[in-house]
Each structure stands twice: as C-alpha cells, then as structure tokens.
Image 1: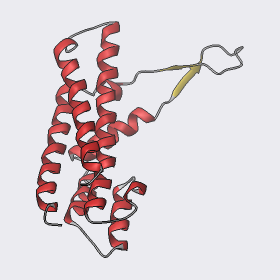
Image 2 (image 1 turned 180 degrees about the vertical axis):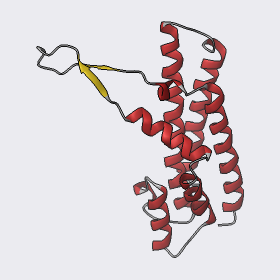
Image 3 (image 1 turned 180 degrees about the horizontal axis):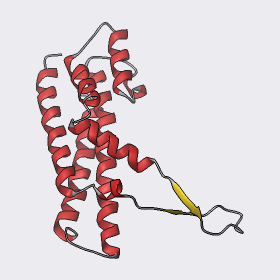
Length: 170
C-alpha cells in the first residue's frame, strides 16, 4: 500500500474537521472570537497545502519512484517521473492547475504564500533587545472563508478521487 495515501486522507479529514468547527460555532462571530475563526481557517488552509505536498509524493510512489519523500513541488514530481521514464497525466494536470492563475489550486497556494509573507509595519518598543513589531492584519488574510476553503477541499477531493481511479492501473 502507498504510505502517502492515508497521510493525504488524514490531512483532508483534519481540514474538514477544522472547517466544521468554524461552521458550527464561529460563522458569524465578531470581536476576539473572530480571531479564532481566522486561526481555524488558516489552519485548514495549511492542512490542505500539506495534503497537496503529500499527494505529490503519493503520485510519485504510485508510479514507483523510490525517493518520493524528497518531492516537495510539482516541478520536483515531474523531474522525478522523467528520471524513471514516466510522464503521468496526473503530474501534468497538477502543473497546469498551478500555472492557471484562476484555478482553485493556484488560489490555494497563493493564499498560503500571502500568509507566509509578513510585512512588519513598525517597531513597538525600540528599547527592547528583541525587535517587537506591529503586524497589520491585511485584507488578504481575512478573505479566507469556510465556503472558499470548502470549495478548495471538494475540488481537491474530486481531483484525487479521479486520479486514484486512474492510477489503480499502474
């Protein structure tokens, strides 16, 4: 059995659990509780991104690449597949989705990149030996919603289901 398959499923399940938590209890909250909603949505985003990285490894393992654990990008997957004389349609589809700026996958990865791009605004306490900065929340961090994340989750599940049916033949 492919060891990455259950890991991908687990990350998708964790994402779903986080989104259910937000949907049940935090959909319309304001104030400090809104930070919890944002934290859960960001956590769900990271679960999706980890599931994607693990899925790249699942594809490589399915096609019998021996060093799948070293793959961390679709470019790496394509190079790994070429190194063993394979060019699976799954890798090509993932590369196309990443390149298509309007696709769910490109949007997911862009949202993750925006979360990682922190722009310090000002030093709060210049006398401190540790630089403390005030971070602006930014509109792009607030755009994550349960609905959007659920769309990405379902699109990813659909893609995986379709790919796995095809990869059974490998």
